[in-house]
Length: 428
Image 1: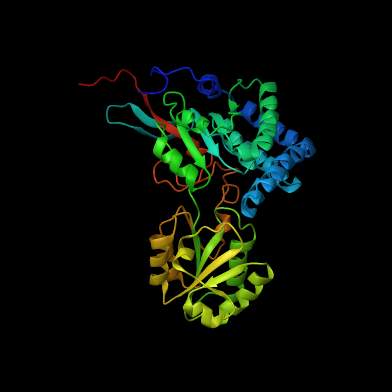
Image 2: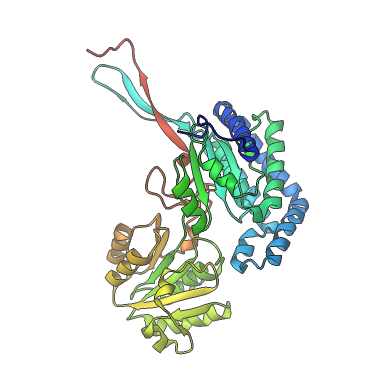
């Protein structure tokens, strides 16, 4: 029995969240009918407003960062939490990018004529009310609100308590702009509750929330997966690998591997384990280690790696299963492509996997056989991102197999309904 029907004792927190969800559900029905022009104009205005409010956003974010430091939270966590003028500009650019994309709502696909003369096709429609439960990164607030708005969905946001000031400020700006364009109140909703029980309440709102997307650490994923009565698309951890094949061009491999590890190590598409073919390892690893160590990266290697790089720490079994989200890299030398793919199959999280090679046959095998939401040849895992792949902002990177996989853009936030155009056909 869902929460809407069962008899329960009075609960003020539940009552507040239920009221927000009901308003958001009503908004979902209304926003599905908003014109593309209104949605696009609102998104551009939101981008402008974020930029104009950069100083106030930074001030609110500083409150969150200061509190996080007082609590001695991990450096990668604080890095994801922190806003900068550049990151606010990226948020604004993401909103503009979404405004420039084709509106998927109402698109008719696969229209065919049946032998009896009727036409059958599918029309893209919004999913409805989407609940986003996320941690740390306040830029997610703007990204997902933009994507839900453009795809005709209402969104119910529940960010982590560590980013409360930042998220509240961003939501306030977006809601104000939405209202000025006549977008229904509740289309962008925010659960301003830090109590952990708020998540459990949201997860039981079947009949109101149509889809839940969690973005965060293992504890959050476990909670959502085990408790949710609402369909879930997981955006899980990124234990990402890069395999440097025997035929790889050294300079290219060094550039890609450095980018994958150090460009922004605290995010889910950063490389955590490097696999190197035994033939190229003696030439490649010393050059790569020089660049990584200059960037402050700590290296941990298998016994073969430690013979080539004798000053680094020895890797343990735990290193192959750890998502560091930090400047730490595990390195393993493998005999061949098969061993590399076997390692990825055993330890990978099916998020982002890359190979560097000049061997076309090896590249095709890697693309065909490696199981992940995105597979790269001669490119960095850091490119597994909605903006980089042409989707505009993203809801996150789905590691689920049902409905959507990889970066979730506009199309992934729609489902389809059958449409039938007839001229009197009946079933005999």
